[in-house]
Image (cartoon, one colour):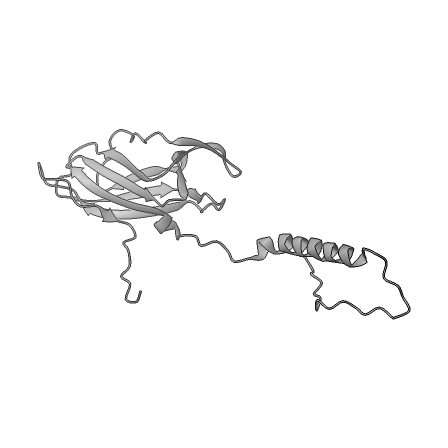
Length: 188
């Protein structure tokens, strides 16, 4: 625990018969400056916590049906945040999954939590093939992920789920369904 001595800023009065050595006022102002610097260092970690986005806002997940046999999963990673590529996993309920998805390449980063890791930033799109067509059927896409903010704060692993209806036959891709849609703001 850090204890800080609080001062009124007033110098104690010396009795008239005591002489003040030359340079003492200079040394005391240097000491006060050093004390202020130490105080600033000691309280630097006690300031306001950084403004961090909620997990589902920092790593916004959505999915859509591209065709009757393909789902596109998408993360929009907020600026200043990143996902760990090896912590990204997908599951599909309501239709049998096909081949393992091909994740995009990321950039290498060294961090204190996981060492050297491949990370993903920006918009991350992954195609999830189904073993057989699921035209006009509802499927649920579950994404497991974990990421961090560049300021050194990591989030716990999270699971996000969306349910969507696959396109029928040769229909166009469906619209993205968001796991955590933006809330309406009544007041700005």
